[in-house]
Image (tube, rainbow, N blue to C red; front, top):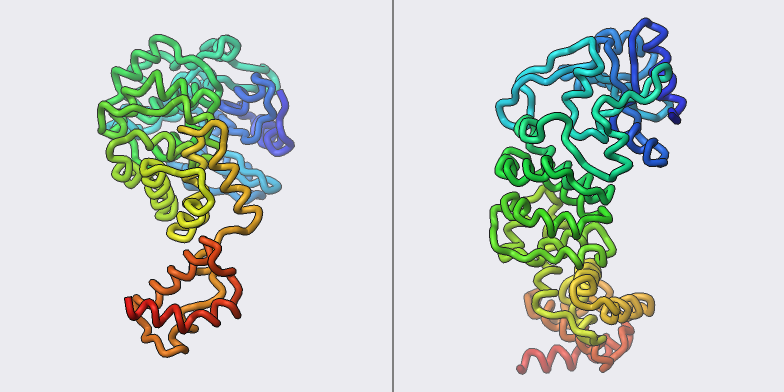
Length: 394
């Protein structure tokens, strides 16, 4: 198996000190899928204090040391080195009550979520595959290690991880694991919204996202505590950006603003998602003036997202999106920010600073959009006095 220079150094240093050490988890899975591993996690029978001492000549981090993990920076690459362990009972269906260190690799692999993630690689032993993970990779199956119900009771996040891996890898979920997902879906209430957000975003980027959302719609209904909604799984692959995929996902939620707000997203992301979905529901027209007015009222980002969502849901020929991109390329959009006159210009002409200033500027923007006047400062200044007088008379 390919190991990066840093990963090889970590393993050889631990072994030279008399310990066992293996690359484990996703890096082994990726290698067996003919992908170049990016991150290398290491598991060892060395206790955390021993590991830290062995790498005292490098920068180490203790954030996960209570769970047996020491992070080491080697030439800009971060390696998480974790002591073989078995997890005790969980009180909250997420975090073990206690962690027990063990000298056995088998104990450590037995606690992992899915067979495809429960393989290790040692430079002496080669691939260590105790649960037929390689077979499941070849058959494109996501299967829990051990009893699925128990795995999900230990950590409810594994339910979302199963769906995410099935989507990203475009795998099927093994029948016993599938049944356990539906049976234990109620445990998702124990998963933080931050982790839910992370998993949903990754899931939606997967090739199999539409299929997974369609097949497991009941799970998403439970996750977002809203039943009887229709998701648009066929539209998700046609959404071109991560945020537009998220918008398509929430489009069919009756209370989409509430559900978006429940996720751990930035304020800008929440506003973009909610507004773009609202605009699509109200209708996006294939019309230059319509699109220009939308941009003037909202923003380029908002309308760009709206056209992406509209295209994914209703316009596979991309007519609206193509028109928007054409206008964008030709710099055909004008907003209050890009208008060549400002509120100061109106105040300088004697108009008191008030809401009327903004209203007049908006009228000027619309005149430019309609082609009544160019967005030219001199021409706009020339008509300002008349515009102000007409506005005040109306």
